[in-house]
Image: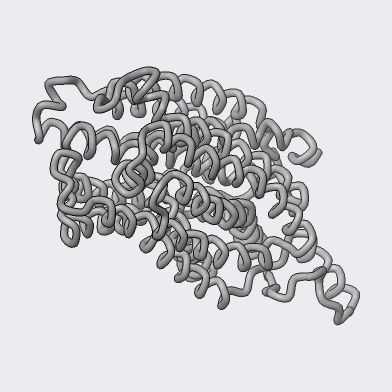
Length: 463
């Protein structure tokens, strides 16, 4: 029986809530907690973050390779989901629960940050190397795959509401107080435990296709060589990295943007993020409908420039009202890329499996992750540039114009990155959707000259 008949898209997709909750607390609050509240120098933070980005890029292929080669009674992917969930809970709690003696020492704070930021990101990589690989393997039809992806992206957006939009108020007004990191530590405990429970629930509900165990185990160096020689690795990977870096800047800098640029409070930061995420959730169904009508590739190419243009109004916002209006523009484009990006990547994984006769989705996704995780270097450079050009070093030493610093950080940099991604996307010829590729193969066998389905950007896939 096909694996798609035995795994619920709802149960698979809900796992994204668990994977997103703690890591978005990290992405959305780590910079604020360590630099603004605990006083870690922005240059030190940027340096550690750059190292963290390199190490995180290196561990991705290892985790993906191990996942692809695993053959066990519990499946290939499930063991890594279980172990990763438990490790992620522990490291997230430690990252936001800095002992007083450590916080009082500049060196101690930097070391604590480096150790637990890196291990938290490694745990996230361990989980997502397997979780992401399950999407193309469990759902082989693009329409059913789009449904599963819509569920998981919706689950991610719900997690964003909690981990981003509600966090400022919860951490600074409910569980803690303004100027203190205590509330963030308490939230980390709650989020970590809930996330582990959800990921474990998903892991034990996934039914992997046992037929895939009969495929030959991929060889690391041979597979890496084949992957990096594939044009889609570089083209789709670069676009994905541009999008990922832009969103990393937004997630990390939004609370600082509200504080310094809009002159807002924790409540206003929560309101802005809540409105943006709520609109993104609503737009997800609209973009999903466009995908069903026009295909993932066409919709993806439209969503990217819309996302880029959405960051322009953020530069001109001056208060909560104009910030919300600007945020609505961001939400529309962000939702579009969210609805299509993984579908585009899944097509590349399908083509690779058909071409080489083995599913090595974990390693291929990890290879994409090398490009994407290197966004740590760009994020670090962007943060360091605020010290160089605007004099911002920390909450205790914000420089003469922190408002302009974070206006640039949250608007100009993301716009530039997504503009690059938009240009690159115009030169990419994507593989056919799985059902279109199957139709093309049948037509070829019958001697037909007809084109598959509705995608003009189809590349032939050979085994």
